[in-house]
Length: 253
Length: 308
Ligand SMILES: Cc1cc2nc3c(=O)[nH]c(=O)nc-3n(C[C@H](O)[C@H](O)[C@H](O)COP(=O)(O)OP(=O)(O)OC[C@H]3O[C@@H](n4cnc5c(N)ncnc54)[C@H](O)[C@@H]3O)c2cc1C
Ligand SMILES: Cc1cc2nc3c(=O)[nH]c(=O)nc-3n(C[C@H](O)[C@H](O)[C@H](O)COP(=O)(O)OP(=O)(O)OC[C@H]3O[C@@H](n4cnc5c(N)ncnc54)[C@H](O)[C@@H]3O)c2cc1C
Image (cartoon, rainbow over all chains, first blue to last red; front, side, top):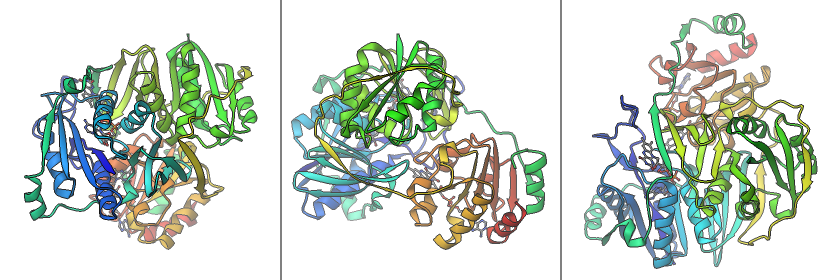
């Protein structure tokens, strides 16, 4: 089976984001961008399926600016076989909404016929946690979200999901969409020889129009603000002083 | 028109997140109808009908709805959607699982995890792990929304909605529930607790983590953890607080041996009073703490347990 892994280029998780003074968004000029951490886990899982003989080919796809190529090359260096770049905007600050991303992915799934789509449970920039669920709805496929363990047997998969109450185990028909959680695996680093090899792996470039998808947003951003700051606290000298202050000053004990 | 609100429950008890979502729904305007889908969940429907502002409860009972499986639940909601402008659910793992599916089937863009309602089509939501707050306006005919519980007070009781049994939708048969692995606990649930004591990597081991539990039990608190503590096996996954775990806003949050990475702060920085205990005075957690104690936790925690 083929496995399709959508990967998103996002602000690096270590970068402290800054809201722009004109409240139009977050400053993305000259900041470090990386592959969404959840998507690294999805790529790793696809590679492990291939290593276990359960997948033949791994296709990675990214939808965004031209520079998303770097993210795709990174996935190819980890071990994916080929890449599709969908150039949807020339401005990093124009993020493409999950609904539009899901529609483009549906068109790619129709074309490529993968047996599995593995993706991140959320992108750490917009934290929508939506694209995988939307794609599976559009395909009429089952969804296995927030996966922390995946076992594929024939035309079914058993997936352990991280939910509010603990863990939930479900069984889904294949093909399906799985979205991965943090504890599914520990992604590998690309080795130097593999980074070199990745440069020769095929990468196709497309546009949303090739798939007949309109990416105009349904949500308009009215403004983006800094969250309210907390007022400065105090350092206490001892446990006794802490308990005293919590009782009398804060009134929470 | 009206708001359809998906209740969060375990077939016996209505989760507090539902009452918080009712408060958000009231700000959107229109009647509020609660959908209770489950298996043998008639009691929950009665509880939901008592929430302030709820005019009607639709109760769909079927095996297929007993475990919050997204595919049959989404089909049920789609069958009802025609009568509503807003379809909302708490931003719990089950709400986040099903609502984007509903939105895609309605060709609408889901609006996840809203923290304020500015009008029927304008909402505030945190982005970048809560480092920025975006105000977004939806142009979709139907708004499909999940609501961050920590940002809204629970609606009170005193309502007198009617309960109406409705038929189940056909089950698409795409998925099946196998089992739940849930640890039973007498402690309050994290997202509704008034007090939380959380431990991080600094706890060092699963055995040491028990000191956190002792302190928590002294003050009737829930227990939380950082991702590092969960990844290291000191605490189960449902304890994780943060960008990818639970978002909490208790009256008192005590962070012990937690450095204060932005991903952790994303889940707790709206707590009313934050206490940090850490041996490193430079730890970023002190920047959000109201009370900081620079100390070795193995020294401070037993003293704290004794003083409470
Ligand atoms: C500052 C700022 C400005 C914005 N401006 C606009 C604007 O001008 N117009 C507008 O419409 N919206 C704008 N948005 C909102 C934004 O478009 C969406 O809300 C956002 O894309 C939400 O989705 P997510 O990436 O968090 O997706 P999630 O659903 O959380 O992503 C889950 C998974 O889907 C896959 N995925 C998601 N996106 C892609 C992709 N592009 N390529 C490949 N795989 C992908 C990945 O596997 C990912 O792990 C803005 C947001 C911000 C913060
Ligand atoms: C995509 C993504 C999502 C993430 N989501 C989350 C999330 O939801 N929640 C989350 O928590 N993290 C999340 N993280 C991880 C986060 O970045 C941090 O790695 C994590 O929060 C660190 O946990 P910690 O503070 O327990 O550990 P550390 O950062 O290792 O801090 C341990 C602290 O303990 C102190 N300490 C050690 N020994 C003692 C002692 N004896 N006495 C007193 N203090 C002591 C140290 O001084 C240190 O400050 C995420 C990361 C990524 C990339």
